Structure formats: structure tokens, C-alpha cells
Length: 164
Image: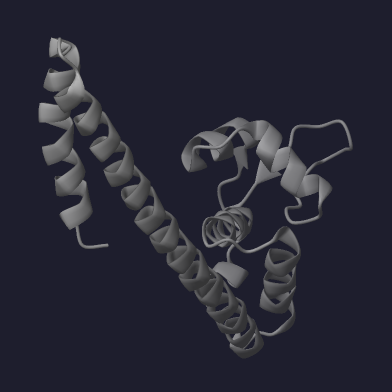
């Protein structure tokens, strides 16, 4: 990241080019500008926004933070530390602290999803038994129901056997 701090000189690109490069909309870039996360270069208030390598690095960090679940406030703090500390030590420490918090949140969500999965499998098996009983007791079995049951049970069991 240190080399990126010295960047900023060189080729400047437009908002459309930057948006295309990162696969986001120009509106998203303008939103980050409104929040003060990006500061494009302009010759006058009405002139075209131009972005340099430093802006690209900041946008890359913003989008990575978003992907990792960091709030915009957390991302702002990390970016401010990036600007304030040439050693990058404080930025890295803070990023690690936020990262650990988000890892713990992810683990909690995974546990919740595993419990939800277990409950859904239990209900699916219970409902399957109800339909199988109905099919067995029906004096004129519905061929569509039998076909459904024949295809559903193996699919359900295949899903249940998956290691999650």
C-alpha cells in the first residue's frame, strides 16, 4: 500500500472508466464521493471528475471492505489511518480487529444457518412421511404423487448427506 500512497501522478481516468473497471455504477462512485471516501480531481467545480491511481486503490479498499462486511464507517476509519500513518501499522491493526469481529459474526451466522438447515430437513422428512402415508392409504393412488415421492426421497437424502 505504501507505493500506492506515492501514486497519484500519471494517467487519470473518468468516472465511467473507473466504474467499468470495478464493475460498479458511476452512481456508486458518486455516493462514495458524497461520503468523503473518494475525492476526484477537478479543474473547476463543474469540470469532469478525474481519478488517479490513489483513487483506484481507495476504491479497491472500499469494495473489499464492503465484500468483507465492513461498514462504511469502519472503512472510512481504515482509509483515514491509511492516510495518517505512513508505516501502515495502525491501519493493519485496525483492519485485523474489524476482521476478527466480522469472522466471529460469520461463525455465528453459520451456526444459525446449520440449525435452520437441521430444522428444515426435519420438517421435510415429516411432511414426506405424511404424503407417503396418504399415498399408501389412497384406494386410487395418484400416479403424479407416486412419481413425486419416488423422485423426492432420494433428492432429500442426498441433500441431507452433504457435509456442511
